[in-house]
Image (cartoon, rainbow, N blue to C red):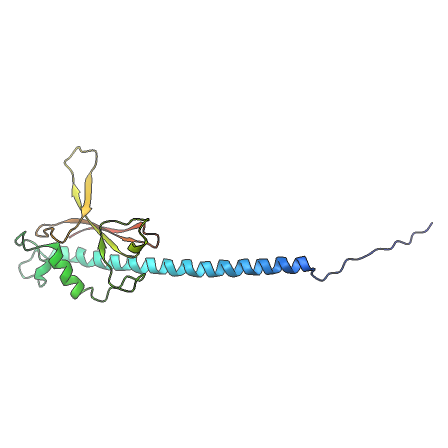
Length: 181
């Protein structure tokens, strides 16, 4: 009986198709790393926009307790005055010229604008601020409150309930804070 068998051992070096597979995997990893870097940068920009909103909400919330005193220093944002002259537009102009003059929209590298709402169809709204006044409805209503844009003509002589948000990279609303001013 002839028991000699001829065993052929395949080579252990990578074949041409192995090299193609390795290159495809390296390319996929590079693409994932690149897209991850872009996503991280957009997340950082959204977070900076959110911090802008938080700073504004904190300032307005802190000013709420003080702005009705007769010796309040910022007359443009003081409460309890004449409803026709004590407007949000005057207060906002003062804030943008002084306290928040260095605030930048990180997506556009210019001061953020106040917009009516975020709209995913309009990508130019990224990083902008949405400031809404919250008006309670009468007791027993199906809807507890109505949100509307705080316009420059709105009077700030009385306390206001406000809701602040920012538009993220996809121009979707990111709610930041509800506060009283």
